[in-house]
Amino acid sequence: MSSIAEGDDWPRFGGPNRNAKSQETGLLQQWPESGPPLVWKVSDIGQAMGGIAVSEGRIYTTGDINGTAWLLALDEQNGKRLWKAKIGRSGNPGFIFQPDGPRSTPTIEDGRIYVLGQYGDFVCVTTDGEELWRTHYVDDLNGIMPKWGYSESPLIDGDQILCEPSGPEATLVALDKKTGQQKWACHVPAGKFNPRYGNESAAGYSSAIVIDFEGIRQYVQFTSTTLAGISAADGKLLWRYDHPANTHRIPCSTPIYQDGLVFASTAYDAGGGAVKLRKTKDGGVEADEVYFSPEMKNQHGGMIVVDGCLYGAAGGNRGGFLVCLDFQTGDVLWRERDAPKGSLMMADGRLYLRAESGTMILIEPNRQEYVERGRFEQPDRTREPAWTHPVVANGKLYIRDQNQLFCYKVARDQE
Image 1 (spheres, rainbow, N blue to C red):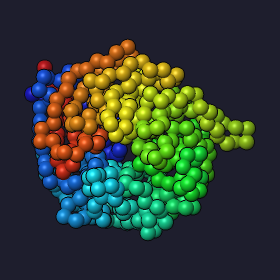
Image 2: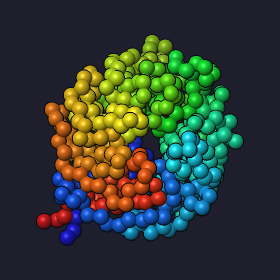
Image 3: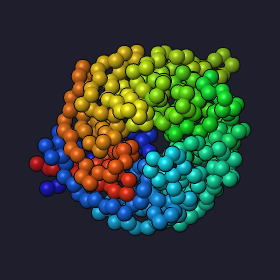
């Protein structure tokens, strides 16, 4: 049978608009009892927690293989490896119980691929794997590697790339995307939490977004101690919001900008907070807190706003469950323990939840109650938590489990 899906690539972390939403249509609205059909599976992509990007018939991801961190290109139709390009040092920068491998997702734009290794190797290659330039967050940009390694996924905006090497005088830097040369640097002072770590806000594990607010283009990034807005033009620190930061200095989830609010969340001893940006008389920007909710302690699965509702998994290392909040007020609308802590994305009116256990769940967004539209268990589960975010691209669902990548057909068939 032919598919009726309208396909869409997924060229970067968070998808085309970096908000974890696909523009796909024609997808299954209810899964069969056994789940959608498996199209193919590969088991040779190396150890990693980083995600995948899909562009022009190819899948790009990363993995540690035989003592080196690699960027891999796979055929979208069958998962066959087409080439690999060296990123750099392999291994696990964090605690011994953490898996090896890169944490970042490649970014594809204008025939180039930008990828970050766990130790700070930052490389730009062509879509054929030819290296164009490289730099290093520590050696070249004077960064200080965070405890669990560099994890952000590159943000490209116009002719520049935003990076977070987190050095003493340069928390964030902008690089020329064609050459890798530095354009500007921004120092973000430490927030009110953890002053014992010094006067800088070190790198977190979150990926930045770009927003436009009343004619001011800015990057919003969650550093280890604060949510910050930085001028895209010159790197000036515009505003900061410390409340969602936790005392462990571990922010992971990408901030959200929607319906006039900026929202960010961390797990452990914190929660989630929303601010409304305000332009000052002198042309600056300030952030006013609208609400703070300890109910949305999102560790690293991400959050999505749909029809005024904020969906995200709340919980830390001991697990958690899906929570739905009113995005404008922070009021809890419902909680669902049958939808365990995991990673979220959205496509064709459905939420895709990848639980840490490996379970894959299809959910219909609903303000009043939790509505499940199917679930299945991934075969051949490893012992590691399933932290890699799911991806839907061109009628296929991709889920990664360390060195394994599974491709499922989620497009509806033509009747």
